[in-house]
Image 1 (cartoon, rainbow, N blue to C red):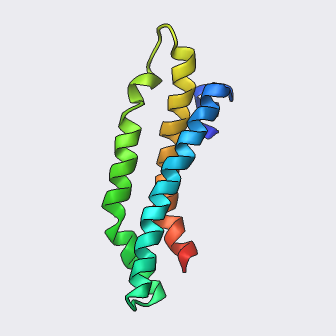
Image 2 (cartoon, rainbow, N blue to C red):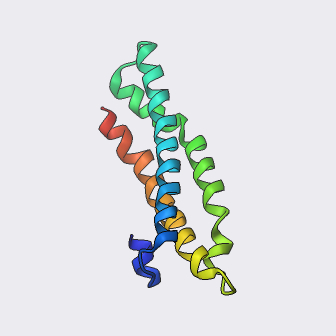
Length: 114
């Protein structure tokens, strides 16, 4: 929502589709992290250490998923031709949301896991 507001765009149907895509990607990143932390706990690692170690060891997969998904719609952010009124809000939501969701996944989710 902040990315839409900063870019001067309105919440529209394409932006809503972007939110759906963003929620799926953010959920996938969270599941990668939580699943690994659960695996560490099942192996007998302390809960506090499992959350720290899980966050440290899953930085690369989470960042790679976020980076590849963020780099794809960047050209759509700068589109000015026909159809850009559909592409730009969707790309704005996905790129802006992935930046914040990645930070939240790597910092807040391990703290909440404890």
